[in-house]
Length: 378
Image (cartoon, rainbow, N blue to C red):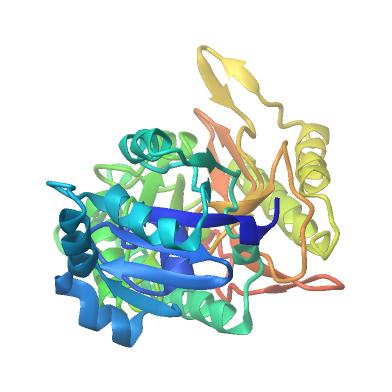
């Protein structure tokens, strides 16, 4: 079956559906209809969004929902819904085969099947070209990354200004908490038109859980993981960076842990190029950690060692294809991926270091321009 024999259909809100935003470059908080029919891209919009879509959406035609609604009523449909509108458009095109995303609403799918349509889905990436970033897209990601670096720099400066008292950090007469530092990061990002959610500033034992966002006073002399991944409010492209620091003095064992992760991360970056196998890169990191004596497994009911992937794609979603992990992907020129190995040992501490790189034909270009400094001094 060729693309001319079936239509592509979305009924979703582009504010939350990155594939739909990619297809239209139009942001709307409410669901609308998007169709690709025989090479033509069109949207059906409510009166509220009609004029804005006609001036902003990167599609071939913008149609009026209310106009089709009136036509449906004239044909005896008492309360036309989105599927009735789709049915009118597709009937004119003479198509009964539809390609829909995997998250297509079930209620709409059932109604379309009742009307005689045959639905097909495909695995992500739905739009395969999304994974290959254009120069414009790389520029958007880099701009978000510069904002990320500025926010992390402000946070690290706060840690440098902090003093140590009873094993925790104090600043301006009160404990320096994870919450205070996350607020500083998020406010700095907002000043640069970026929005962050679930920012991680986790110290000590909390850092040993890779997705613990952190809470309470930050510890002195122990590792603190910063993982910041905001989205630009203007371009909608993400960036992603992790750094691990200590305010105070790190133990010899913790310094060794940090150096092991840093060396593994930098070696993995050297292996990234067009045609490289993400699974093999990830396996190389695992083997390096194992040879260095850092084992992975369940200890006292809690995982320790290295138990997450080495990297993932970044773009309109914070996690998208490809993967540098156990399952892996073949990397291609134009991919933007993270490289973020980590080691986590309760009692000792945790380290994760993450850069974003652009895959090139012969290697990669690091899009991250922020130092890897472990011990923060005054």
